[in-house]
Length: 297
Image (cartoon, rainbow, N blue to C red):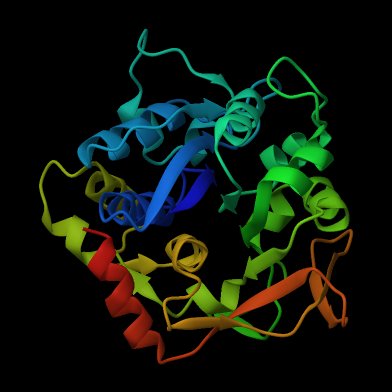
């Protein structure tokens, strides 16, 4: 069974909750196992939000959170994670330690799914040997991480709210970390770009169910932005590809190299021995939406 570690900036956009819902259902169906998860922000309640969604499905795994200097932790950007804050509840370990432990104790290799800014992933790569493993981060990735799946980048003309998008949110929030990861990650890296998830809509099933924690995330986000119904599916589509190898709905292009420029722009160039790949649709966007909604329930 595939082993997944889920790294997320949950608490801002609702599609993080959709991605976790999808992974939990795939876990219950014995198609993938979540070996750990971590918040890559310092948002209040983020770790508890992850736990609440997982508990709804009866799925358990260790949860970490970014420690240290505040990062995307302002309350204005905390759309729904604070709702789940269990003050005085379960103590949450540092994301780096949770990741290193999960990777070290898991038999075989894991797949790392990163659907937020790449601050945590950069910290994983920069980590030193410790009591959990003698290997440093680069060596640990080389030995134990089969592939990294990133929701990030924009590689084609994409339109959102009438504006041309040439930089993508996750990348531009922490450009130095994105540059470090793309330059130093030793395993294959699959990029799920803005233009892919921007045309796939999910969330309608969890929105219908009262008391559903993922549905609460969607409702609170939608109400905040005066919208209704479903949400674009940047994060669920990334998680789905990682856990199913595309499920016949998604594929990837030729090998190459992604470069992140100082302004956050991402450029892909084909290279025969490159380790980077761009995830692409294989069927109509409506069919992808239908399949993802089947798992986000």
